[in-house]
Image (cartoon, rainbow, N blue to C red; front, side, top):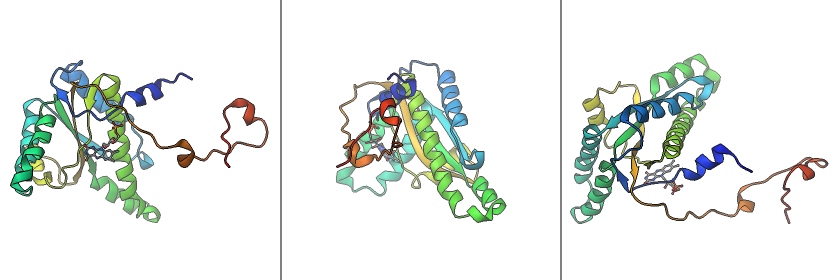
Length: 214
Ligand SMILES: Cc1cc2nc3c(=O)[nH]c(=O)nc-3n(C[C@H](O)[C@H](O)[C@H](O)COP(=O)(O)O)c2cc1C
């Protein structure tokens, strides 16, 4: 079975070896990222996800902020490894900062009190969907990326540097760039431990594979 989405999903991998030679212009890359987030679903179509897209020196600045914040808390003898990791993110072409607007979450909680407890959870899920959409769209354009979480350590400084609205909550950072190394093999757990499929008694067996459970 050939399926474009599955082919794109196969292309999306974690890439730490990033370079600056993007196959798209910064403008095209930024449009791709925005389109992926725009098209990602959100609960009640609330569109709570926000993004800040940093290219070139702006991205370097971000990873410097992270480096200086980590220098204060990572033991000196372990810092070289941390620094090397951050330098690899900074070696890319840019970084996407994923935010969720807490004003949207609060507004939904007030409007639909019955679901009040769910909205923060759904906002996190919406962010995951937005992150995944961007990651997959970038991969489909032969742009490598990884997913990082230096929040909340860097939140205040990042907010001050790029005038981020107070209601935006930083959820993830995605450094991206050219793929400078090939991807290693990835292991997958046994499907039988992961999925349960129940077909109707008659008819479906002929339509596709039916797994048998012992
Ligand atoms: C919710 C989530 C959080 C993640 N957080 C990190 C992270 O903080 N740092 C990191 O290097 N990778 C992070 N990853 C990437 C995973 O480690 C990676 O996707 C997984 O090992 C599978 O490898 P693949 O991306 O090559 O398919 C995260 C992935 C997900 C879905």
